[in-house]
Image (cartoon, rainbow, N blue to C red; front, side, top):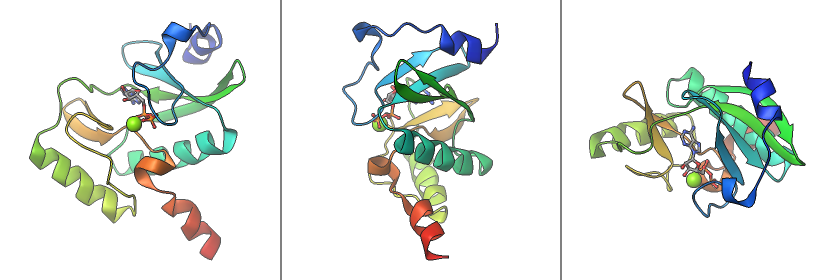
Length: 144
Ligand SMILES: Nc1ncnc2c1ncn2[C@@H]1O[C@H](COP(=O)(O)OP(=O)(O)O)[C@@H](O)[C@H]1O
Ligand SMILES: [Mg+2]
């Protein structure tokens, strides 16, 4: 079964909410060992996050953001899953922050065990909402 079909079969229950009481991501649901679905309330919010995650992914510091999927009135997308259990070293967090700043993304809310993860031992940022990384890309676009 492909990932989109798997995502469409998701039945949302309160206990499948993202394990954290997080700010913007309403649900984080594993589909396979490698991919998950992230769901948000607002379409614009989701679209903005996907845009930033894809941009950061091209630079090697984010999970792959596959297609967008809407489920039960929530706006979502399929993302590569990162290991958030192992934790980054302090040096890896510093390097990740430097790379993010080069991409004009804020880094105030990233640490060894939050909003970061590892994919094949490569440090990545996992949270691209406007609270965590700002909305710099959109501002740059408007200036043009
Ligand atoms: N790509 C990912 N890989 C692994 N876990 C993730 C990923 N994206 C989100 N999560 C899990 O879902 C939680 C909430 O996601 P996050 O993007 O940080 O949302 P919020 O903006 O609500 O903090 C994370 O703390 C993490 O446990
Ligand atoms: Mg977060």
